[in-house]
Length: 95
Image 1: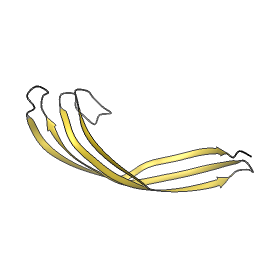
Image 2: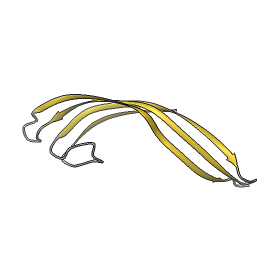
Image 3: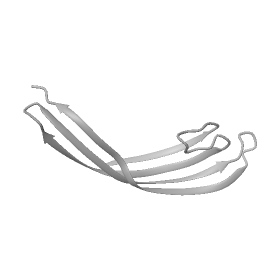
Image 4: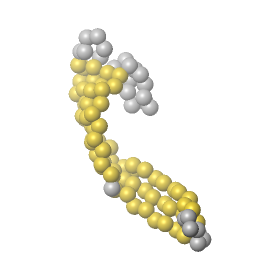
């Protein structure tokens, strides 16, 4: 289980196609996820660990048109429900 809270102000650059370079963003995001894992023994010392997590994340933010004038263009809300992470690990157990 995990939880997250983010208070952000970003702008002036592209960031993983989430933000436009021409705008500035001021908002908050929060959410959480539940995970499930399974360990599969391969030998006495080696094992394989598999995990998957699904979550819900929400954000509310204001979008500004320029840095100098701070002219607010719109308020936005977004919700994401889906996969949060997938993991595969090879584990070596020390004696």
